[in-house]
Image (cartoon, rainbow, N blue to C red; front, side):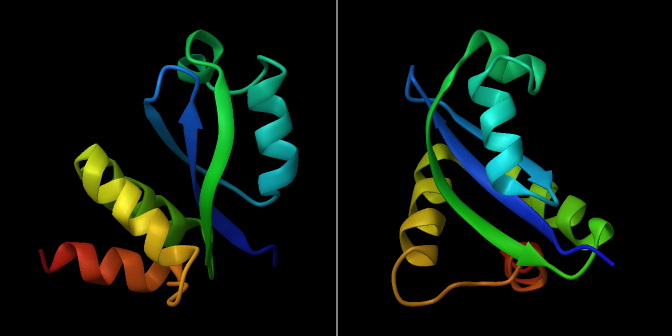
Length: 100
């Protein structure tokens, strides 16, 4: 069974995009090539901010939804924490965000 990831991209205009994939590197390349989501076709990505492993697609989808409910500032804080001391799993993200 493939591992799923929820990931966050920063777009050239400063906006953030959240998605899920089994291969984040391939999916990022698709976004950059203009073959990804409709949003990233009109808001090209500039960099991959963070990605979080999830045990399955369902958990990744729940984590994606929870992250999309956050303000841009909280999304950036989540990415900073993920790339720093405490890498959270997608399940931890979904659980933590449901309690806020």
